[in-house]
Amino acid sequence: MKTYAQINERIGSGKAVVLTAEEIIDYVDRKGLDKAAEEVDVVTTATFGPMCSSGCVLNFGHSTPKIRITEAWIDDVLCYSGLAAVDVYLGATQLRHYDPRNMNYPGNFEFGGGHVIEKLVAGEKLQLFALSYGTDDYPRREIRTIFDINDLNQATMVNPRNCYQNYNVAVNRSDRRVHTYLGQLEPNMRNGTYCSAGQLSPLLNDPLYETIGVGTSVWLAGARGHVYAEGTQHCPTCARSPNDVPKEGAGTIALTADMKQMNPKFVRGASMRGYGVSLALGVGVPIPVLNRDILRRTCVRDEDILAPVIDYSTDYPEKTGRVLCEVSYAELKSGSIQVDGKDVPCSAMSSYAMAREIAHFLQDEIRRGDFPISQPLAPLPREQGMKSLEIREDAR
Image 1 (cartoon, one colour):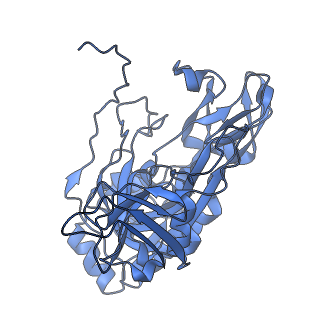
Image 2 (cartoon, rainbow, N blue to C red):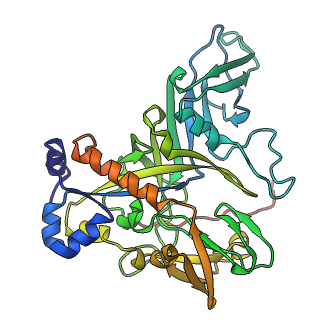
Image 3 (cartoon, helix red, strand yellow):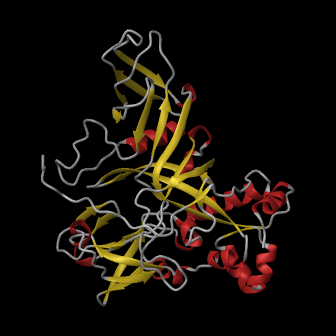
């Protein structure tokens, strides 16, 4: 048994033994679980891929004379301005206001909130255009200016839902092409797509949320951030394998960090034809080895993680709940899965290579003593379902 304080003391002295979630598998095979639990202090996990429920809070500071912003656009992308005078929230999936969307199906969705966030983190110049109705204390009614991230007082990423614990594999059984947030799906199951780092992914290495909770420190695109809440749609009450790993979406986490400290390599706007825009993010989470059971769970392998295969032409949009079959991440990463007796070529929306790089970045920071771990302030819920939106007639 180790404590957070003991592990942080070893991190501070430069003596911590830190392995990635890939490396720990072979290490435990060689050393045995008990010996490895004594020796290893931290296991680093990571993922990189589109995370649509992301965004940022920006503070512009006050102009002369002052303005109380009621409508705002950054590079023609609408921001939410129902906050204090010069605060706005920019969502990753917000479209540029004159984007034709799917009027000429399938739309290309070439620019949106995710791309603005990418430009911000990269230090590029952007245009702010804002309007107001004017007040005695905030008399300016319009403002247009050029800025970059260094001109802002605060640029804080605030993401309501990141790092899905597991996720669907998308296929298309219809005879027409389908465009989804999991990419373009060809008719008659000529391809399949998925989005997860599998054995490197944070919540798959802590399936029961024993170390990842509210207050856990995370590596968010190179900045030190933290989990500020359970993520939206956090639904841990689900089917699980004997190793406690969920066989569907399950857990999520809400993340925040200072964008001024981020590495632009790990913040990328994404355009999804026929669907919309998003933001691809890199996230790393350290798992402290407090005991042998926590370590054992970090040894999960791709072949032991199952994901549901869903038909995105009918079952997903109609919410039928039907699962065609389950496949392992080892099968997915082989490039081909079997569905209804048919070989289906598959590809990832996420990048395992980038996830591996992030796990090593975090590993190096912990070894240098630059990234102490934090004990959660509160655990993530372990038993919780997810409500559906009921469509009701107005009873007034």
